[in-house]
Image 1 (cartoon, rainbow, N blue to C red):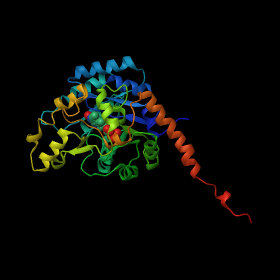
Image 2: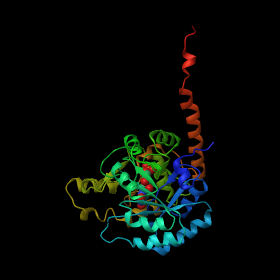
Image 3: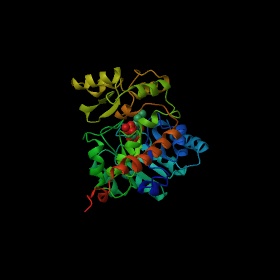
Image 4: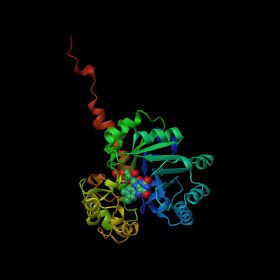
Length: 333
Ligand SMILES: Cc1cc2nc3c(=O)[nH]c(=O)nc-3n(C[C@H](O)[C@H](O)[C@H](O)COP(=O)(O)O)c2cc1C
């Protein structure tokens, strides 16, 4: 049995499972493994220092899989923005057919993607932004709850309410994101009205993920309590692993400190060292509360197969068994 949803049909993937963009993590090996497992993976455009590097990474991924995969374009509100137009051109010229946008309004990018037959899955963290993106004409929504790694927004609405609230307003395919790590999450997301799940933290902790083994072991050892919300007072909240650096950042900002005082602590050049060297206190690194549900480091293929198989058993077994027939309960006349 396979699980067919509006998402699998519209986006042409076998399973309703997505690996969202992940800075420093969403590279060719992981994305190809996700594609080969029948799920949808996204290469993270901005992990590549230049648009030309992105073109190479896409080519590298194509050598590892002949299944479809996408590219994540995270639109950051920075003073010195990366050359988005050039990254976008590379995505189009490489023949990519699915893009995950996130971070900000996707409107400036939609015409060129759509003119070139590219489907856009827009990731956002509130019902109002999801509705806005649907109105703009994106092809799917990925809605990220408060549980998620990275930027959960400022509303603090967990998936249990966010997903069904969004489902009431969203007609295009919708993916539930944040806190998903196993079949229970997938089945719950489908029950809440989503057409599939997006996972970051869970895919980060797999054999094919290129981060240091020590980070994967820390995720396995960590619990749902081991994340911090940094940048809250700046209204640019990010959920990251609790470590010396993130706790210091929280302390400085809560005491009224400004961004300049934490700039060095949160530098991407420090964060990337965590993933490269396995030094868990080198900088800040993203991970979600799903850490409490991650207990092993499987291959991507085993992980996806396990989630789909367990989900089918859960639906047909445990849940199916709960449905009693009224007839059986009737007292004979
Ligand atoms: C290490 C890491 C880096 C991430 N970087 C990005 C990013 O650059 N752009 C983006 O849209 N989402 C990013 N995310 C968020 C994921 O795509 C996804 O939305 C999130 O991880 C879902 O929550 P989960 O970790 O509970 O599964 C990142 C997540 C992680 C774990």
